[in-house]
Image (cartoon, rainbow, N blue to C red):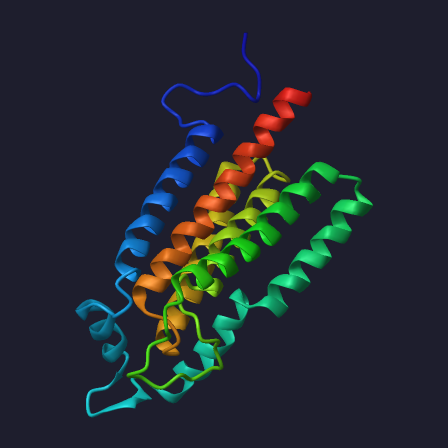
Amino acid sequence: MSGTNAAKPGRFSRGHVLTGALAGGLTLFLIAAALAVRGEPYAFDREILLAMRLADDPSAPAGPDWLLRAAREITALGGTPVLTLLTVFLTGYFIVKKQFASLCILLAAVLGESIIVDILKDMFARARPDFVTHFVEAGNKSFPSGHSSSAAAIYPTLAAFAARETQSGAVRRYLFIVALLLALLVGASRLYLGVHFPTDVMGGFGFGAAWAAFVFLAAGRIGKQTG
């Protein structure tokens, strides 16, 4: 007996993809955390940040003038104001459509990620890079990158909600590719702006992806138990 939701031979199920994202994200976070525990940056942390500065002046960014302006705009996509607005608008949408299960998933992904990242920052208490100029304001604690974590958790979550509205596999893949690119751009902007080490961004990506996958897996399990 077959149906539209039946798993196709040779294809990974949604559960497999989420489990892989959880395992992969958690592994990446743990590797980054092990590196960050040292406190002092590794050689590659310094080299990557310095590669984004003029060779004779670490206070000046490499590249054309517009790149710094673009990095500041892009980094805002992982910041609290933009993501809060997106969350509020989508919350209203789910309330109007009476999709309260989706609302719970959204709030768990957004609020849970934010709370846990704040706890992790306090635990690691890693200082920001001090050998390059910061081109945006940032707090004192660096690991994990909150912008990177938020982008890696929230944009794929939004893509997952949007993907439910189409049956096209190509459109779904496009949505997740866009979500991934947005997260990567936010992470890269944090490095270019000098406010994070590469290991901070790695840790943020890992935790954000793992948390989003965990929320969807937990929601699916709860739905099966109560359905």
